[in-house]
Amino acid sequence: MAVDLAEIYRDYLACLNDRRWPALGEYVADDVVHNGRALGLGGYRAMLEADTHAIPDLEFVPEILLADERVVSCRLVFQCTPRHAFLGFEPTGQRVSFTEHVFYRFDDRRIGEVWSLIDRDTIRQQGFRPTGSPW
Image (cartoon, rainbow, N blue to C red):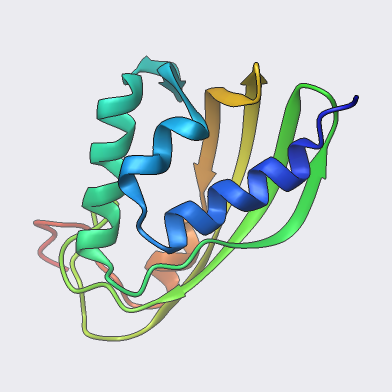
């Protein structure tokens, strides 16, 4: 029986959006690597928890989703209001829209490696300034 990684990925996004952190290990491998850094499940969870702390209304919305038998690629769209510094930007109290382009390599139905690129220029163009920036 073929594994439907698109369905597993949608379930993973629901886990993130529902903040079901204890269930994260169902979707993410214990030794997960993110952008070349071996974070492990605990580090990956801490990264996601920090993101959702900084942006309480953060919701992971797939706009484009492609999957084969080992890889999922997705363009995620975010529309949210940061409350604390995030991605190196200071919060302004304003809503921000941006995208993330991300690829996931799956091993045995769980995410083993993630390659992520967030559109920081779009964030900057909406008036967000880097943390500690005088301008």
